[in-house]
Amino acid sequence: MGRPRGNGGGAPRGGAVSPYEGTVRWESARPVLDAMKSALPEEFEGRYVISVSGIPLMGGRSTSAGEDDDSSASRREQDDLDRLRGLSSLQLKGRDVVQAGVVTRQVGSGSSFLIGFSRDMLPLQAHDTEIVFTTQLGRLVVKAHFLPKEMLYHGELAV
Image (cartoon, rainbow, N blue to C red; front, side):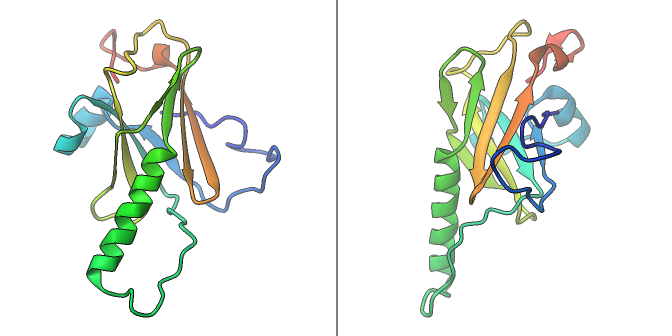
């Protein structure tokens, strides 16, 4: 559903080629929800939801002695997700950037994330031009471009 541009393929522009092949998908799109036959988690109510999968969150931190317990791991996990929330944005071409409001790791998958953006802060319409999703997983910047005119389902914008 998202189109990689720039560093999405071919020769890199000012950076190294990533060894990861990930997927960026507009998870709250009606066709995706219909195909999955399951609802999004409750915390994503009233939000556009983008998933990023196949690329690990590379925090670059190692576990030191004494930080092996579950509460430390949980705290590190939450810190990583909070950092990812701060580094994730959605922008309609020509409008202000909207930061993510909610980020979770998908259950059962270590390298899949759900990232939610307020629908109220960024109302979208079928005639809008281009929507750019950006996030950063460690040092890797991930971008995907979405065209609303290509996101129609039964004649309506289905985001």
